Image 1 (cartoon, rainbow, N blue to C red):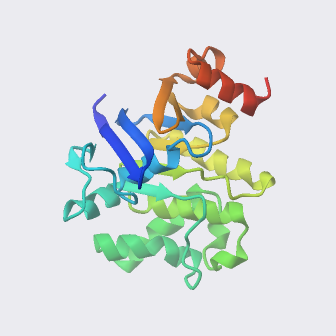
Image 2 (cartoon, one colour):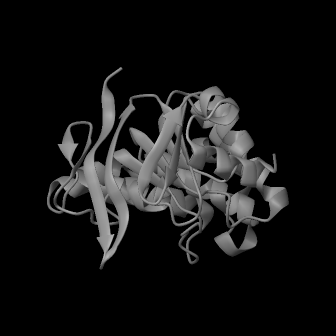
Length: 245
């Protein structure tokens, strides 16, 4: 399979602190990659660099579908092709759920309002909240808002979806409903990179699991390789801590 996303020697400094330390990574079209690791390990920074929400250092490069991710005219193209779902839902509070989903395709792709509405309603059905179309974000639960955020990212028909800890801001009883939506998406063949603390989810859904620590990719492999037979001591220590082995 061809690489859709490619990171070569990607570093990121915040002053003297090195958040990413020469990351090399290729993600194939249709691949589902889960990124795990302790807080502060560089997971979120890495995926935020993919669509330049964070500017990476000039020594490295990131390409999406062959297009270099950098400031300038290409950036709109890249961001249209790479959807992002955040921890906090980032919905527009003054717009209805339907209009939140319709806005970007109309503004950036010039899609007619009627067509954008049809697509938005289809996506709300896909994430299981058709009945919420005319409500406002504050009228929805956290889990419902995150499902809207997923529908909004899908509305741009992206080639890849990035999830930055999509369940970490949710109450525990709402985590399952959002993970179920992401699991169904994984089955459709869309390329996904998911930063997550949900180990059971990563084991179930990922084609590949990446363990990061201190700005490095320490280990990567299939869920079975990483969870059942990790090679690196740092990976073993992390999993022992989070899985209470």
